[in-house]
Length: 131
Image 1: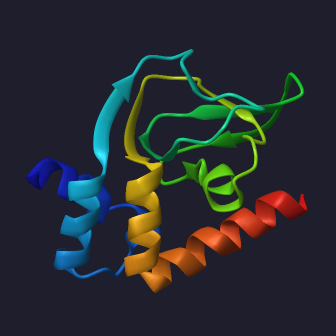
Image 2: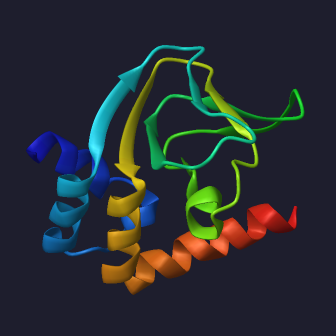
């Protein structure tokens, strides 16, 4: 858990959080290592997880075209989980990647328990939907 806690502590999404809250995130998130070329989400599919990119780079693809690049500290999957709508994009790792992944129930529980996180995630989701 200490290694995962260190990963979480350095993520901007959780900046300034007390150790007890970071420990809750660590308990809810799974640490996953993936090779380059692995799809993290598929456009049009239902959302089942929230993903934080800890290390590596990923491409955001809509309608077969790369529209954005994600790097360490970026997150994805929140739009489908918050709205219940299908995934808005396919995200594919461009390099080897280390991720923190939460299933939908864990993500919703965390948003319920952490209003500051909920505000950050919803603000980001609103900006992404508006584009």
